[in-house]
Length: 194
Image (cartoon, rainbow, N blue to C red; front, side, top):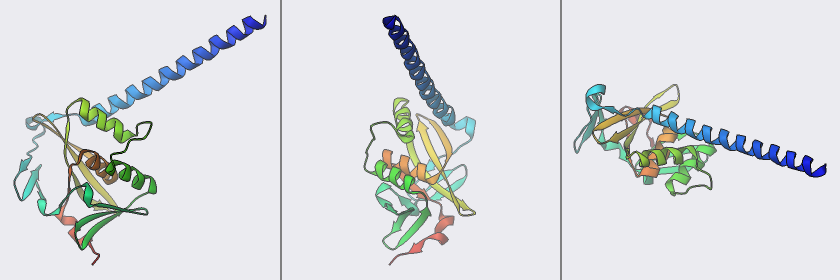
């Protein structure tokens, strides 16, 4: 009698285990499909996006991105709840954020991965698998104290421009060693540190 009860309990716990594993796999598939649907790689003709590069500027959807504010991940300096983007030796653009975001940016800058993947690791893997390049990120504007940015992705001759939180854009720029551009209109927000 005890053996039957034990066997029944074992079968029940195995079913529970399989259900949990199945749900976990469905969540992973859902996340990957979500990322792929967000990317929506579109052709230059369809989107009428003109990405034109020169030594001085990038033209994106008719908007000039001045290369005088071109940075890379080594220009990201982290403080308690603040990300500083070093414009030059004496100027920075600061963005207030959470300590969690600071830790994620630091991890990305150090090219570290945790035991379990974070969302930026999943996005990085998907971009790698589908041969999608992160062209650059663009810190676009500030509205009522909130910064806005864009992530520019490229696959062959296809370009996608995605809206992003600046911290997520900086994380991906750090992972992929991509350029970071700051809109010239934000120049009035640069702080002198020398």
